[in-house]
Amino acid sequence: MFWKRLFATVSSLEADEVRDFFAQHREGTFDLIDVRQPGEYEKGHLPGARLIPLPELANVLDQLDRDKPIIVY
Image 1 (cartoon, rainbow, N blue to C red):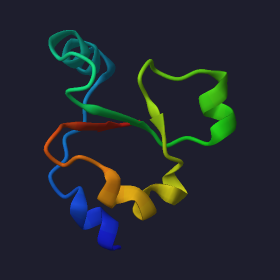
Image 2: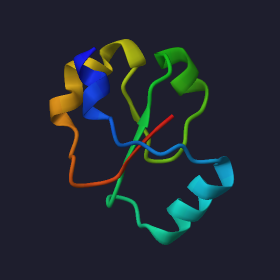
Image 3: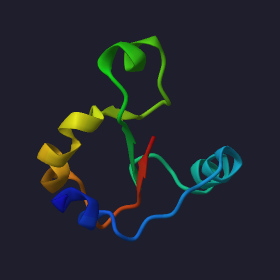
């Protein structure tokens, strides 16, 4: 799939590594994307997370700022 190539350089982070990242970077310097379904997002999500359900992600890749780190969960 085309969209997979756009994320070719990715790193997997453990929960504690993400916490450290959040502690070292202020909000707005990275994009936080929640790819779950709307009902899951409404039940709870990380502060600042933007909902983009996984099936819709390929349609909005051009809207993501590639100059900032992007954290997807």
